[in-house]
Length: 464
Figure 1 (spheres, helix red, strand yellow):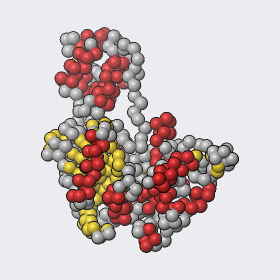
Figure 2 (tube, one colour; figure 1 turned 90 degrees about the vertical axis):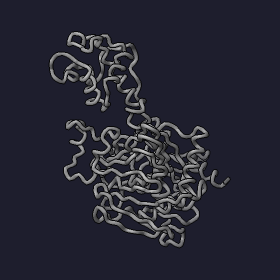
Figure 3 (cartoon, rainbow, N blue to C red; figure 1 turned 180 degrees about the vertical axis):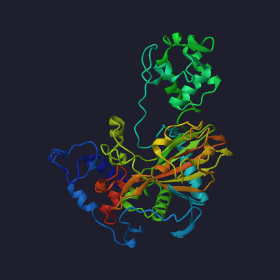
Figure 4 (cartoon, rainbow, N blue to C red; figure 1 turned 90 degrees about the horizontal axis):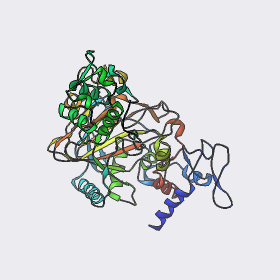
């Protein structure tokens, strides 16, 4: 245990920042010393040159470490929807059925044993009982926290669309009725307000302009549109029914030192999906999510586009920098999601754009034109092209990215848009394994989670 803590301290102490081929070394006082003007950039970690020489040993045989050698990323063959293939991973039979080709997605029944699922649920429950299970953010994990804050003051004109009556007055009659208020909430904040919800907002904000249920053009001049704007933003973030995501989560390290069973599970999926060991050991902790009644996660991507070249991958930075500067992008090559407990009703996983040959991300984002907001999986779960019913022990694995010509992270697969449908009754528990990976120019960078990989490399059994 002391050795592990020492390695962690070495990791924390020795990390500094540089661009490719810029390394850092200790000065006389043991501090990180710059070797170039670029060393000190807070966007990416690097290590002392003597440590890097150890890390660059390649493993060429399975026998050396017990994990097969995969040089780069790759994708399994999907063949066609409905195709089934079987793999024997360390004596564990895994059956993959292709459920879609865009994104390439497999359903894997009995992906975990009963003992493994009970073990994960027990550890997650212990976290919950000790206060470790917390409300999930709209985008959990490595991403920056939501920084929205309501406007200061008692009201006034909104900063966004709410300030213009044209965005409220749908029938252009110079008046705004309660139905048009609900329509505004849907068009601009994607909130499905009923008449009760509209009246509640009017009451909370004291909007006297709606005393008779109608706000005229003259009354709109005094309407507290800034208060409405703030109210809708707060409801979208905090109300269980309307927020982008309503769930609780905790994170469990998957290193062998922390938990041998979780490490074994990670290795099994790594071997199945042919993930290089460096990538596997540098991926995020296991995320455990609990969805109670009304729990949902509206449609989203688990990763982000390669177009944001001014931002490093989040796993190549540090949590402190993510929170301070909000300057990173998610680089999750794959998502492997396992149902640990199925709810009585609801809780499906929906892929609105799966295998949709007419799908266009830009057009899809013009939400609600046909009366259906396919991003809203509380209202339109069953309208998705692919809907998977949760079943305990079943895993759903899909690729968020293509692979580029060098075998590393390629373009985002926009068809991977997905989300969790609303739980109508009972509770749903899932486990997410996110396999982060680098773009071709970042292969030399280590992940913030690479402490275990450093240890293995220093012992001579790791691969680059």
